[in-house]
Image (cartoon, rainbow, N blue to C red; front, side, top):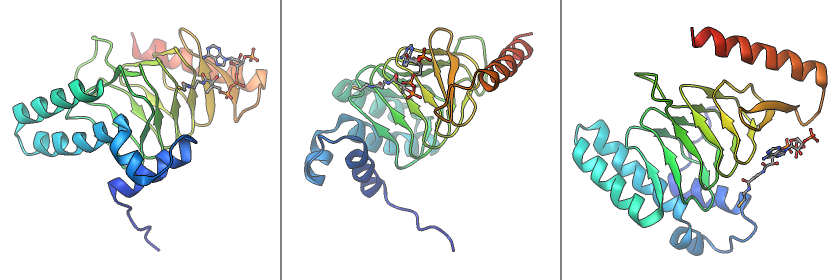
Length: 199
Ligand SMILES: CC(C)(COP(=O)(O)OP(=O)(O)OC[C@H]1O[C@@H](n2cnc3c(N)ncnc32)[C@H](O)[C@@H]1OP(=O)(O)O)[C@@H](O)C(=O)NCCC(=O)NCCS
């Protein structure tokens, strides 16, 4: 059976309650969470962008950047059910894709390296956690349910269900376990893919 698509606000309130024990009522969430406001504003910016009203789209995005300290380029594709906590200093670039269930904290960048053209920002798959001040750079993919540690700098794809930390970010857990042989083989693959994509 086809899963029923839930609305933006319903999903926004649900993920906020799920992720923030401090959240009390739906009204409080709608009125006081900057992440939810920035994502709501982005829906309008993205619609304008897609309908070729690019200047209006950028103006709306910049107005809400001023109000929330969250900068989302109108071109970014963001699913319902994304949770932004705090949010100040969060930057999401034009070709970024963020799937449902992703959690983004303050200070995160989904940015470009300055060396790519076309698709040049990250894709963050379902359920991934991007901790505070993590910098994700380039057209990389962060796998489903992956965790990126606070202040990590990620320049290479991250597989599903792993935790990466540090600068540059390295795998430290796979499915929550510290299995050195799996970690080492994943790291070898990540290094090889980094070098092949930077020839
Ligand atoms: C990465 C994180 C999500 C934990 O993921 P996890 O899969 O449960 O990983 P663990 O806590 O088991 O840590 C794995 C290893 O990485 C280390 N580590 C964890 N977070 C780290 C970080 N941000 N930077 C460097 N090392 C880190 C741990 O010390 C541990 O090291 P070890 O292998 O030597 O024991 C978490 O540590 C984190 O960074 N949370 C921040 C969330 C956030 O942004 N909160 C802001 C709320 S306002």
